[in-house]
Image (cartoon, rainbow, N blue to C red; front, side, top):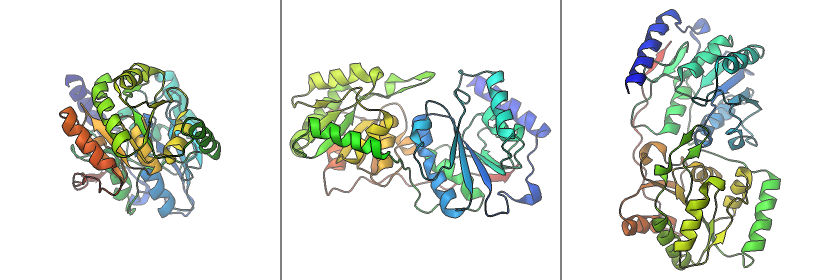
Length: 372
């Protein structure tokens, strides 16, 4: 906390040296075909939470060319997104603790050569906020958390209890764009969908209802938070009830880092699940989820992916806030873990066909908006 306060104080001091000024007082370029840069390096779940902004830009500015600067690890979240015209792989730049001045300045030089008309920074890092200034971009919009929006010409100050996706949308709202019913979206490729179909034909030949369960998560480059995982006993109890009460096949998924959690859930279950550990890429998992009747997981990328493909989704939260970080789609809900039976009852109520999802917490009003 002391370090955060020191960084914020330094950024506020630098703000007097680097005041943001938009050309002619405009927040976005006054042209039909602007070149717009989105800066959103990480992580996969957060990049998916930024896709509503991409939807708004495509709908509001159909002639714009939208380029996203995204990390190597996270680019899978938007590689096939039709609202994106181009991706710039920024490597590890933007991932805390995994890049240095050379890579950062190299990215700034590369962006400067592109002559973007506007940049939207959906990241709280002062270095990411400063990047469009170094790249010579005139209109620079973004988040200003604790005074860290260095060099931005339009700053959106997030409220502490607002959903993360709404915070991102507040930036384009500040520029006068209507956000409507924008939600997180993911678009599997045709190849990913075909792979998922073949996988299900092999392991679920009867073609019955499938519920995907992801008991892992909590790992990203530079970050490991295993406390975000609900207990194996809880997942096993919920999975058994989903199998019995919904007459569904339970599919366990995960990657190498999730193996211990997946094995523990499988061992604790009474029903026999289909274990697809390590058998899907991120895109292939998106294709698999499109064929599923529902999803259960932790606060992790697969839950955001499930919501983004549009199926009923339940994410269980242990040490993070579901009101801020639940998957952002109408058919998704975040549940705070309590007792095993109580939590399982709520999961079943949310995923039972025909049952309305529990209402999400009301969205607080947008944060303060101010010119740079």
